[in-house]
Amino acid sequence: MLEALTRPADGDEPETPSSSTTLPGRARAPTRSGRRCAPTNACGSTSTAFIADRTTMRGPHHALLAVLTSSREDFEDAEDWESTIEFGTEFRVVPVGVNVVHANLDVANTDFEEFAEAAQDAPDGVLNWWQD
Image (cartoon, rainbow, N blue to C red; front, side, top):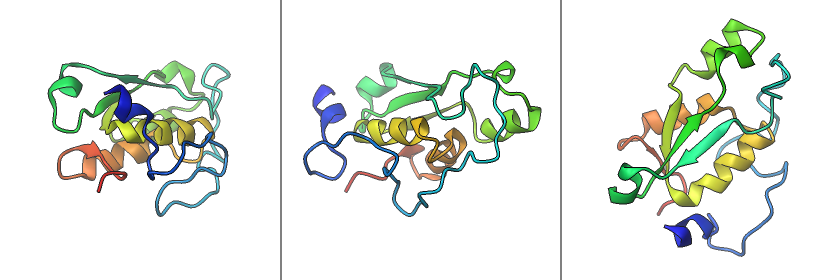
């Protein structure tokens, strides 16, 4: 599990995530440009925990559970909260994708709901863009 978490997504040497980190097929422009967030949410700081539970340890992908740690009170606007949780408050992601998800959430390049939607759309319910 540890080796899978530290392996670079593209097979090259590990990079330090930056604002230029993008997802396959995604634009580089921040997606949260119009969002109004309460100071506790800080729009751009990661509010997601990655959990290795029983399913992680026993599943074929060892996919971690990404859980939104924000609550309705962290958003000034109810509409923003509803948009954030449209596809749920958790999703599974393969270990090699955790750093990419974290970096993109941290720089507000991709919103939580975009990752949750992609996982929901995956045949096995796991965000798995980085696997062969």
